[in-house]
Structures are given as C-alpha cells and as structure tokens.
Length: 319
Length: 254
Image 1 (tube, rainbow over the protein chains, first blue to last red):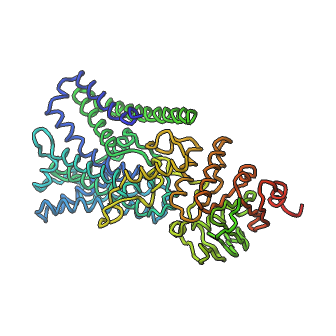
Image 2: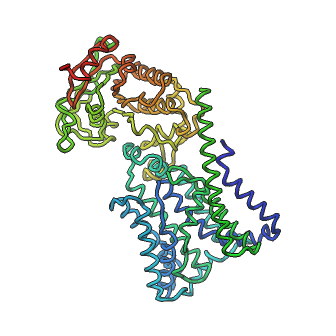
Image 3: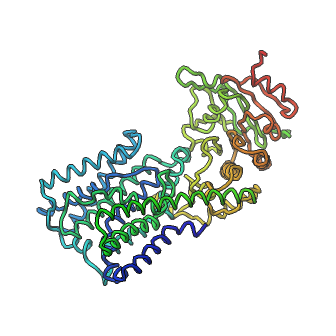
C-alpha cells in the first residue's frame, strides 16, 4: 500500500534516470536549475488546480488569469515604480478573478465549474489582449519581480525556492488544518459535508480564490522570468496544470490528491519537456509524448485503484 | 427488554410535513425512551425517511413539536439536532470514503487548537482524535483491519459499523439509524444489529428505520408502523407479531 502511494515519485525518478542515461547533460546542476526555473510557473498553477480538483471542480482560467494579471501589472509599472505594489496588483487580479469564479459557480448555481471557468478563461484572455493593445509583450518589470522570476541562489532558482515555500505552507494547510480537512470532506461528499455543518459554499469559494491567487503568483514568476507582461502567458497552462494534478494521483471524482504528488506531477511534465529539448525532439513529437505520458500515468492510477479494491476484498474476507 | 421505568428521550407530537401538494407526514406522534430501541416500519413512501429527516434537522416540520427531554425544541439544521444530542446515520450518505475512520468521526467538529486562531486555521489534533476513535471502536467491539486507511477501502459492514459508532460517539441522547442493514449481507447485518444493542446498553435511545421485518425484530423493543404518512399502529412484542405488523404495513383494511 505504501508503495502504491509513492507511485508518482517512483515514476519521476524513473524518468530522471532514463533521461540521465540518454543525455548526461541532463543531470548537470546548470540544467537542473533550468528545469526548476522552467517548471516554477506550472508548479504554481498546479498547486492551485489541486485544491480545486480535490473539491470535484476544475479551473480552466488559471493560464488566462495569469496572463491578465501580468498585463495589468506591466501596465501599472508604467506609472507606479514600486515592486511591492506591482506584486500586490498581480496577486490581487489573480485573487479577484478566482473569487469571482467561486462566487458565480456557487451562488450563480452553475451546473459545473467547467462552464464558469471556461467563460472566465475567455474573458481574461480577451481582456489581457485588449489591454495589451496588440503588443505580445509589455517590456519592463520592477527589480523585485525580476529577482523572484529569474535570480538564482547557487544553481537553485529563487522561483523554485518560492514554489517550495508555497508548497510547504499548502501542505500544512491541507493536511494539518481544519479548513484543509474540510476541503477534502467537501470533495469526498458535498452533501455529507453540508450535513456535518461544514460551510460548503465558503469552502468552495476559498479554493477558487486560492487557485486564482496562485495564478497571480504564477504571473509574477513568468513576468519576472521574461522581464515583462504578456497576454500570451499560460496558453494551455490550464491543461498542463490539470494533467500535473491528475498524474499526481488526484481524481476528478474529488477528495483525493496531495500537495507533494501534485508538485511531482508538475515536475514530471517539466522534466519531460526539458529532456525532449536536450534530445532535440521536435515540437510536434513532444506534444505526442506528453499526451502519452498523461494517458499512461492516469492508467497506472486506475490500476492502482483496482489493486486497492482487490486488497479491500481480501481484507474483508480475512476480517 | 423494555426498562421498567423508562424516561422519554425524544418525542414528536402532531408532526406534519408537506412537499407541495403531497402530504408526506400527517399528524404523526412518536416517542422513544432511554435504553430503548424503537423500530419505525413501513413500506416505501410511508413517510419514514421524511420523519427522520425532520427529527435530524434536515427538513423542518410544517406543524408539530419536537421535545428533547420533555422540552420543546426546534431543529433548523442538522447541527441543531446534534447540539441536542441527536445523531443520525443516513442511509444514502454514510461516510466520507476518502477520509480515515478518525477523520470521519470528527468531520465538522474536529479537535483543533490553539483557540485564539480562527477555527478554520487551527491545527488538527490528529493523535487525540485517532486514539479516541480507537477507544470507542474497541468499546463497541468494531474490528477494522487497518485504522489508518480511508474508509472507502473497508467492506460494507465495516463501513456501516464505523458510521454507527460515529453516531454513538457523539450522541448523548438519541441515535437515529436509517435502514442500517439495507446494503449488507446476512452476516454483516447481524454484526451491525449487535452494535445497535450495544448502543441500548449504553443507555442511548435508538430509532431504527426499516422495512426489513426479520432483522429488526431481533433488536427492537417496540415498533411503530407508518403508512402513507400516518402512524397506523404500534406493536410492543415485535418478535411475536410478524403477522400483525405485516397487516399494518400493507393496509389494515385487508
């Protein structure tokens, strides 16, 4: 059983070993730093996506939300010369979009968050393009944001350290705090949670808000890395983040998944992308490989579920 | 089986509940005493589930009064009922499959601290919850293969036992069980019914909703029969009165 729950980690290690054998450059500190820096954005979005998916939801707007936040931040930098203020603006945009997702889903009685977040994906992306006024990048970011997005301590990118800190906070929150327990309870049985006096609407609004806030963090990292805002940030990032979370063992049926494994799922996608670049695989084939990895990872998870079921039957017979 | 001096734990008088034009409960009276297992019997649609949903705070009565320890109260939410010592095991929503037994026991009322933090941000006292859960499961002789695994991996009978034990853990007065053996095999049903008798031994009042005559007769001290939203009769010696109860369930005119 313990072996089954570390499945995603074993898969990541396996892929790292294979890539290291195929291309020795892969395991150099320089390249590891590279992988971490490339993955920081998707890791951040995946952590938010995880919270939403635990409650049986999905947030399709994370990538577009990050793009909108980066564009608004970059435009604001034209008149406000303060790193902290620009960070606050990006985080606020992300948070507000997430909060609205949650509010419209819960109190607008939307049938499924797919609809409302698909709508806000479209709105955010459109708004970002409109505000950018035809530019694909709006150059310039305050020092603080460039530090967060592109500086390194040794070979470890600051962005990766930031992701690590966020992950630790979220891990404590989800596994040790009352509200985190309620998030899992809502995912396990929404009606049961209601009858157990858990404030289900607020739990739902909170996960979409946190997911939006993390999209804002993603905007900071992406803007800092490329020294500018862009309405094109995070295209298809919603799908990558969903894939990362599902590779990490979460289920669309809700109630399952954890921070560590979601992070591993996101890293796995980053590692494979990086490895394929090192091996000079063309972009079209990369798409195919990523698709196969997602299918295989989820299939492994299905098999794990079947094994658990068998184990349960065996135990019931013995009991 | 009935104690000589029985103190009333919970009663309802003139319970009436409408859903639109449908009269789901029609002037129903019911009382259950400490240390007693009361069966509420009836066919599908007789109003049993509506009655217990009113007694557990899921629905509100349109008319009628609920008394706990002889004092009139109102249950607006399930939390109200629980605050009055009334715990319910629902037929449809037994447990959180993704959580372990201890987490299931304490869901919505987690032990956590420190108190100066807002409730949602308090740290779970997992060790304390786990050991209290273990103790209670042991007292009630519920044996689980692994107490740290999520309850989704337990068998049907074990899951039902955890759900009943959870209700027993927090009920100070009444435990309501809605068809606790509906999805179980014979052997597992027997175990759950043994568990019900242990609740009685602990002095709790138990209301057992069922249409499965044979099982219920083994443990109930008294049975109330419902039909079409009305209370149509009461039987004291359940084990000896199968024919009478069947006649009441099917319709007295026959």
